[in-house]
Structures are given as structure tokens and as C-alpha cells.
Image 1 (cartoon, rainbow, N blue to C red):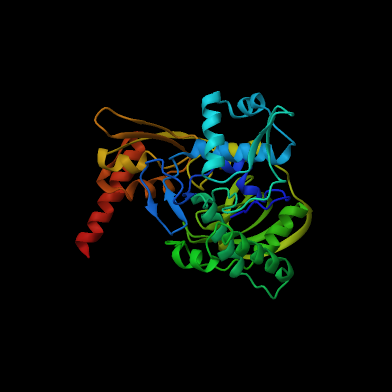
Image 2: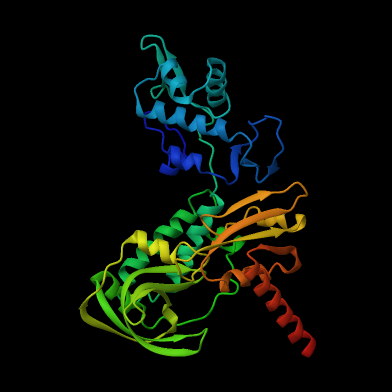
Length: 384
């Protein structure tokens, strides 16, 4: 929390007043208690603050921060400048100013000589000082912070990156404690669980990354798990992609004379060659490796139409299966989802996890493949 001290500028962290930070907030809204009596539903957190659902009064809070920013940055601000910046009526602006003065103890005065509003930094104030409402992290922010902290903590801090990692960890720890909550309490109360991720050792990740940035070709010995085949290839690395907990190398395969995606943890051996890597345009990479569903590549794209039961649609309607997906709710409450795919393997796995709640409408070939997989699974259960 930032306190106003006479004769000093009002102190706020950057995230408290930037328009971007405010507009993207979706977390918990903290307002001083007991001065806030708007008659909305609230849950007491402490003697000092009340927590409100983020959707309640978020636009009002954003205006308060913008008013504070204007008054802090300028000698004075006219009524017209405030209304133009906030896009509100004079009645709304008066209410905002009154709230800041009466509830938050903001030292706002109207200077008749300047014909505008300003902060009174000369008069010594007795009693409660000016405080801006605090904000907690949004869901995206707390996930990013805790994930970064977890990843950095698991790195070898005594190695080459040690001098850079330790300051980053210290900065992250400071950020976690910047929302009026001790960092220890945040770490104790919030967990990020990773379930289903493979355990693997990326022994050749550094060599792959080095060749990628130096634009050198690679010799690799690759174990394709799907076919259990081991091949030796010369590839021109294009980009590294982190997808579903694993790293993949998008590369031009000189053996197959085409673009391929290689799982980095399936590379058994690697050697950087003294040959210039073949460059492939980003647009072509996206067409071949980014147009279909999942990690599997191909430029022959087919669209799948899936229909989910009304019970399951309440979840699937908010899921992102593919950047170009199309979805709509039907009259009976079911949900129809259309996604492009070039290889059906990963798509079939995602369809099957919904069991009988997902029906493949088209194409026919995909519907038959899914049915065959379910029959095979049922036969295995009966035989077991």
C-alpha cells in the first residue's frame, strides 16, 4: 500500500497505474474497510480490507487510478481534461472525486486561480493518509510468476547461468510479495500441479539450440517412438517449440526432403555440422507445421466436425483446441466444434478422452478410426 506524505509525490508501483495493467486485471479487488459501503456482496479478509469479486466496480477503480495518475503527473488538471480522459459525465466525475476525497483521503482540491484540480501537497494532514486500493494478481500473472520461479529453482544455479538466475529469482520473489501478501503465504496457499508430463532428459538441447541460432545443419540419430524406428538424418533446424510439456525441433529433413517436427528428447545423438542450414520462410513453416491439429505436421489439411453432449459442452465451449477452430452452441444445448488436422493421431487421443460425450460427425474416415479405437479398447478390457 502506498501512503501519501505531505510535500512528497504519491508513491505507486507501476502496475498500479498503467492502463494496460488495469484493463487486464481479473483477480481479486481489495478496497479499504470500513469506509467502503457500496452495498455489494463482500467477504472480510482482515480488519483493514474487504475482497470483492473482480467484476464489481472494476471500471470505477480504473478511473480512480487514472485520476490519480493525471493529478500526480501534472500541476493541475481541468474538469474537461478529466472528462475527456475518462469518457464520463460530470455527475460521474464528481462522484469519483468525492469517493477519492471522502473514502481514500485523497488530498484533492479545486484551485480557483488555476481553474483546475490538483493534489494539495502543502497542507499537513492529520489522521488517515491517502491510500490507493491494492490489487492482487490475475490468474494469468500468478501462474506465470509461480511457473517461472519453479523452473528457475530447478536449474543448476552453480552452473553457467548461476549469476543470472539468482537475481531473477530474487526479483520474482519480490514480485510475489508485492501484492500486500507475504511471499511465503503465496507459495504455501497456491500450487501449480503438472500432471501427465513425461520425465525426460534433454541431453542434446544445447547443441540443437546452438545450431539453430548459428544457422548450422545437424546430424541426428532419431528414435521415432510411433514406428520404433531409428534413423540417421541431416537436418536444417528452423525453430524450437515447447508444446504440452515437451520440446520439439521444427527442421528441414534432408533425408525426407521436407519439413518435419522432431521430439528433442527422442534424439539419441547429435553433431553440429559445418554446413549452412537451409532456411525456410516462417509462412511455409506455419502452413506445414502449424496449420493442422497438434504437433503432427502436414500441408494436406482436413476439417473435423465434433459434437459434444449438453453436459460436456459447458466445458468444451471454453476450451481452445486450435487457433483456427470454429464452434457454436446448438439449440439442444450440445456444442459443435470444427478443427483442422493433417494427422489424426493426436486428435483421436483428445476425442477419446471424452468417451461417449463426443461424437465425430465428419469426416467419415475419422469417425471410423475413432470407432475402431474404442472397439479395440473395449476388447482389451474384456480380455483383461
